[in-house]
Every structure is written in structure tokens, then in C-alpha cells.
Image 1 (cartoon, rainbow, N blue to C red):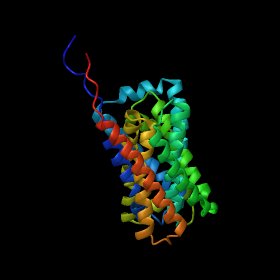
Image 2: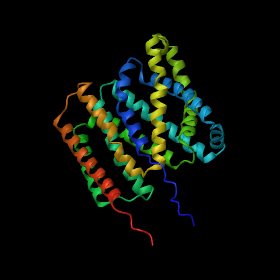
Image 3: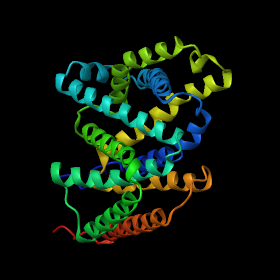
Image 4: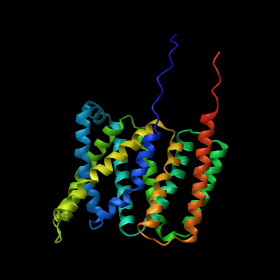
Length: 302
């Protein structure tokens, strides 16, 4: 038997942190395209995501993997469902930010980790330690506190949490790489996206893409800000426990929360501040537990 240690599996942590940081800062980008109707922007976002994916697929010579996925009925059905979920998620989030519901968007992605934990424990057989369950309790208390003061916008938060949580679960289960999967999802959504763009082009005000050169460039950048974090997320989802991935997601809504406070200048209510504190207590407990388990010495093999 070889004395060499097996090659370690790459960690999904860096990809997860990068993806959630980009998502947390996304409202800053949405300010630049605030004049574009949400439905039209989602259409253009899909249209400009696909060419970028195809370029990367060609560069990495992965068309064979894409073709194999296209021939698998189960994979295609799963990607059909995941493409619908991510489109709903995009639309709800863009609408929330454009209409001034930044905290509702933040709350949605605070609920999402709890939904991930629920999916991970009930459907994937993942186990949480006692300390992690205490963290879940604090997080649930924070979300419940904030939800009690935001009933009228809770539908936004729940739509975001459930759509993205289920999307991540499907992408974790499907037997296709992150890039190939996103390419196929974008292809599935291309026809409805083109129909949306054509519809807005026929309206009296015309398409937002042809109104201004600068705005058109910003719209095209939607492909980059869509593809890159989704690819990073898909990589992380395949390499990490889904429950752990869910708690790292607290990074994104925290950034959104801070943007709402300091950039969008939304009023910070006492109930929102209480939720913010409880969520960070939960995150601190979870990170402490993960760190403690990493520090434990591995028993020597005889």
C-alpha cells in the first residue's frame, strides 16, 4: 500500500465567500440599471449570460460535458426546474431593490440559510452538532423578530429564500458541472428572455438597451455579475455540506443590510437592529463550532 496521503479534496469555502460577497454587493450594480424595468432587465441578464458561458465552455473545452448533459433526461428535467427557480429569484430580488425594499431582500437571504439547514437535515441526512442547533435557534429568533415587523413584505423574503434554497439543492444533486449546468440553464431561459426583450422593444418607450450607450454597457455587464457568482456558488455547493454552505450565506444579506443602512438610507427600526444582532450571534456560534472541530487532533492510525 502506498505511504502517500490521498490528494485532498479542494475546499469550497473560498468559492462560497467570493460568491456571497459578490451577491452582497449586487445592489450597488442595480443602482446603475435602476431605470430598466425588472422583467426587461431579467431578460437581458439571461441573454448576456449565455455568450459568456459559451466562451468559457469553449476555452475549457467542455462542450462534450454539455452534450452529455443534454442527452440525459433526468439531468435536463432537473436543470429545467433549477432554471425556473433562479429566474424567479432574480426577478423578485431586482424588483425588491428597485422598489426600495432592500431590508426585505436582506431578510430573504437571512431566511435562506435556515431553509438550507432544513433541506440538508431532512433530505440529505446531514447532522448538526448541539452548538450548531443553538446557532439555528438564535438565527430563527432573529428572523422571526424581523418578520413580525415586516409582514407586508414577507412574501418577498420568502420567495427569495425558498427559490434560491431549492435551486441550490437541485444543483447539488444534479450530475453536471457548474459551468455546463449554468450554460444549459441559460439556454433553456433564452427563448422566454428574448420574447421579453422583443416585447419591451415594441412598446412606445422602446428597449432600454438602445436608449443610451452607457446604460447598454451596464446591461451587458449583467452577464458577468450573473455568471461569475453562480459558477462560484455551484462549485461551493458540490464541495461543502449544504448546512455549512447555508450559514456562510449570512455574509451576503449582512452586506445588503449595511448597504440599505448606509447607501440606500433606509430607516433602521429597533426590530431590525434586534434581528441583526441575533443573526450575528448565530453566525459566531456556528463559525466557533466549525473552528473547534478543525482544531481537534486526528487520532493516529495504528
